[in-house]
Amino acid sequence: MKKVLFVVLLVLLWTVSGATAGDLKVGDKASDWSFTDGDGKAFTMQNWAGKVLLINYVDPDEKDMNEHFTDAMKKAKDDGLLREADYAGMGIVDCKATWKPDFLIKSLGAAKAKKYNAIVLFDYDASLRNAWGLKTDSANAILLDKNGICQAIVRGRVPDDKVSVIVQMAIDLQNK
Image 1 (tube, helix red, strand yellow):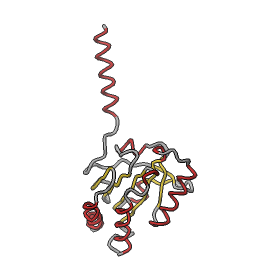
Image 2 (tube, rainbow, N blue to C red):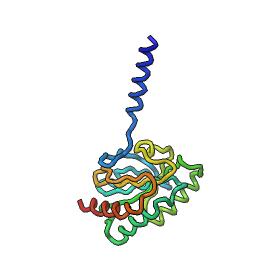
Image 3 (tube, one colour):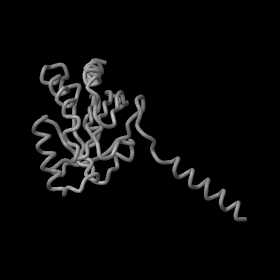
Image 4 (cartoon, rainbow, N blue to C red):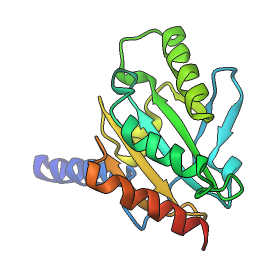
């Protein structure tokens, strides 16, 4: 009887662990989400349906980790290579990954939103980090095509030699 109970418990545990979402990978359709901005306005991925979407998912303690990459994407947009009609970039703050209070996180987010003329959203319970298997205590860059399919994902710092590759990928994707 103990062996049967043990096997049943193992099967249940395996089933529950297998039911959780796996890590987002290139070629996967990204699951949708809903987060609010600093004013409490809710957004989902559907707000940018039909656009190439760059999501910078960041621990506030690592807010500058991928600034070199975000600056390159902004330059491509400022130069007209990435068109607002076909491309959007945003930040999502992993609020659970820090000790910082919400008012300070919102202030840091507002500064980034102003600098990059982008929307910054707040994930208070790390739901996106958990759903997509993103790196904690770090920065993550995710590039989705117009259909929400992951075309590039970097967990951690975007390597210098990959910056121009991902920028060009975003430019090419918007033209498809």
